[in-house]
Length: 155
Image (cartoon, rainbow, N blue to C red; front, side, top):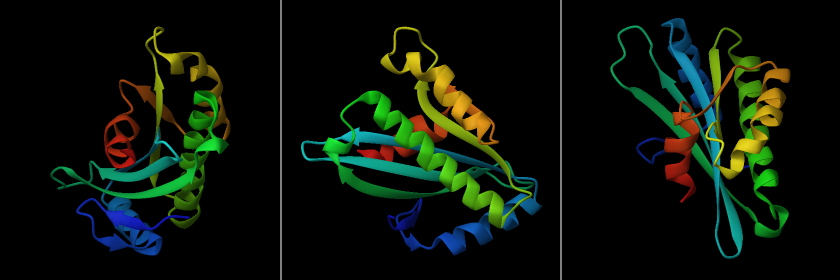
């Protein structure tokens, strides 16, 4: 689902992304995966990103993203949207590890450590889901791939 784009907006393919991840991983770079969603009047936009940072000799980072327009009625609650975001990130991470097993992956989740935030009550369940799937994860304020980059492309 969804067409992939480079951070500059040019169209790319998942195979090209995997090739870039492979080269990045050979240079000790880390891969960050995150998703975010935004509800519009008639649909829910789910944006997912794959960010590459920290390779030997790398200045800055690169990222890829996709946007999917989903039926708004399929996501009636915040819990359902957050679960879908996490599931999308896990599925992307599985694809990456199957193709580039040596990739150092970290999933970024758009849930908040702040007890006052609505998403805070989901922290244990969603982080448990991601860890049980075999991946390390971070939540806000450390989940920049989801809360900044994916967020930018969901709106």
